[in-house]
Image 1 (spheres, helix red, strand yellow):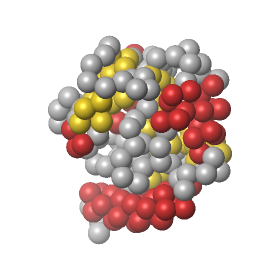
Image 2: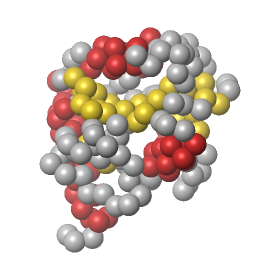
Image 3: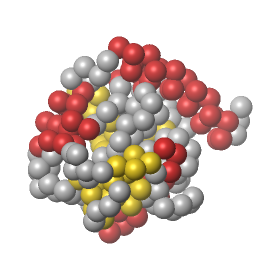
Image 4: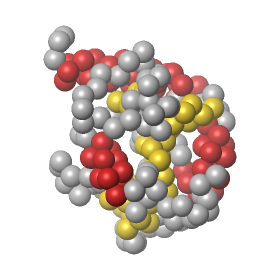
Length: 185
């Protein structure tokens, strides 16, 4: 395997297995740690996500956030996502790939983005699902203003090194059930 696509596919396979095992053990204090982390960003527009399958669930931290919260809406292939306003109890419908999205609402332009992932490494790079949605989205947001990208994952999802290319956006921090890890410039 010398091709980057093959390297990423192999890394995803290993990371999915690690995430599945961690999910089976429970999320521990991860949502509380994330909520405490987000409290220092109270009032700032936040983007979260609706957990699917074995993803770690940010919903309790999103519900506790003091400020507007949006969730991703995929508009099409090769496009950045937009974030539709979400609040606990709002009407949700199935979006692309089966992820739930609010049936209606304003668009949120986030300053803080909780980023789902398959894996991450000690340099702050993440491995996503392969569509490039978050890389495009973070690049666009960061071109307009400082945007904090915080990964949310189980500690078991850490790899020695995530295969990357020039397109991949680096995270500023990762929150796991073990705490917060910041990544330098």
